[in-house]
Image (cartoon, rainbow, N blue to C red; front, side, top):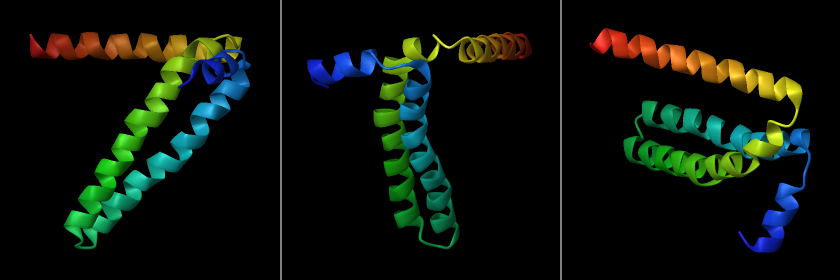
Length: 102
C-alpha cells in the first residue's frame, strides 16, 4: 500500500473499518465452500485450485486489512468488548488444550 492510502485507511471510523474488513470476508469465505462443493462433485483438481485461491485471498487481503484496521475497529466500545470476550475464550481454549496435551 502506498502512504497516501495508508493515511486514509488510518483515519476512518470503527464501523467503516469493520465494513472494509467484512466485505472481502463475505466474498472469500463462501468461495471456500464452493471450492469444497466443486471437489465433492468429482472435480478434485479444480476444487483444490479454487480452495488454494480462496485461502490465499483470505490471507493476503482479509488478514492484512484486519491487522491494519484492528486499532480502528477496537475504538468502538461494543466491538472492543466483543474482541476482549473472544480473546478471553481463545486463551481459555488454549489453556484447556495444553492441559489435555500434558
